[in-house]
Amino acid sequence: MPEETESVHNGATPRHGDATLKRWLGSASIVALGLIVGGFVLGDGLVRMKAAERSVTVRGLAEREVTADLATWTVSFASTATNLQTAQANTDRDAEAVRAFFEELGFPEEELTPAGINVSSYTNDGTLFYTVRQRTVLRTRDIDRAQRAVRRQAELVRDGVVLEDGSGISYTFTGLNDIKPEMVAEATKDARAAAEQFAQDSGAAVGGIHKATQGYFSIDARDGEAGGWGIGDTPFKKVRVVTTVDFALD
Image (cartoon, rainbow, N blue to C red; front, side, top):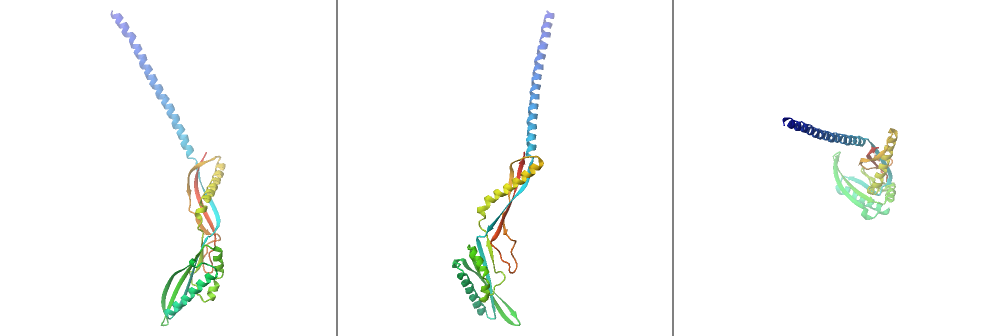
């Protein structure tokens, strides 16, 4: 009997060890498979991340020549006399001459606006002098008529109107919103051309846009800034915008 009991006991021990071994091998296989899959996913993610880092930032330019659609002409004139009433009467006469000048050229009355009056005084050799200054502003969208008026401003001087510093015409382009979309598209197209040249030189291909920044629109005189005595503004302008675009490289 002792030998039979021992035989049964010795037979059970190997079966228990086999089950433990199988469970251990199964767990190890699952862990190994997880490590393999995890490593593949991680590696693929790193590849994608590295590819996402490949990009080029370029700037695109768009320029367009336009003609101003608004003219603003400030006419400043003054009169000096030893009597305030006389100085005032003289500037009133000048104001009427200015108004008649513009009316003769065909400008509507509503396009002319008195822009204020200023009185100052000074003493010279014991005599008190008064200076009265006035301004009249013309605001019109008739650009051709405004240019003709500027060319004839010497007529005001011949009529006795003393034009002061601060007199001058300026032209403004107000249609920027109408051309903005087209100019942004042109600037973006220009940026892509620069990116494609860079990609060609580096053996890559241009992908999609990561991000883009639209710069400020500027409107400047086409032929350079006007300024100084005897130099007037012109209606010919240049609109300019620069965009910054970040393209992916494939």
